[in-house]
Image: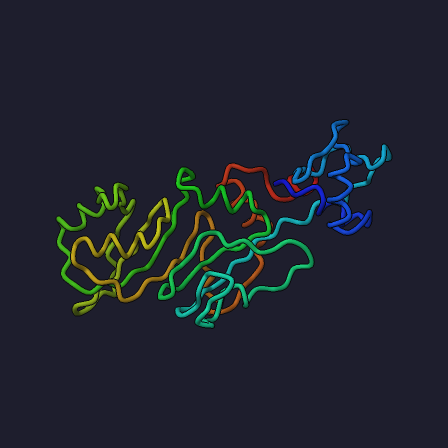
Length: 252
């Protein structure tokens, strides 16, 4: 994970961000012996000098992961002209950096949302090529035949993109015209679960995400609340993303 050079230097107490940017533009800052440019980014292991004097860089901020239970009715953007409640308003404040959401859930979908301070982790987890599984409980209204299920598992092309369930299982609590299913997708495209069911004429009237990769929604986590991922949970998430564990990255 990289960070803008002027922000890192400002945290050392060298000067304000604006002042440090001015010094960088004047050529007074070097990184690994080369004159830095405006907008330069660093990892934090580089040798940085100001006016030929070494600058001790601050330790990297800890990598954190939050598990949040999103209720129906909350939006996943930071602000909204209609003044609806944002999931970000529920999260704990940070002294530095900001929370990055790992994907989104639409207004009428509840369940597991992950947030992290590590932008690279979020990018890796959200990229379609990662193949990270997302598991949902879904209640649909309408008749679903065995041929419909084969179609959903085989894939449906929408807007030039093939969408499919990688697992689909009807649950015992189904009754009447409503049927409950457990489904798994691997790409997390926009409204993918709802759009797939629409292709067979079934209407989704309840949708909840219960798992993202190796992390499940805790049964005791009340909607609207969050909890910090345990170190072992966080490490499993980094492993799923193909990254070194968070503790190792913080020390690097």
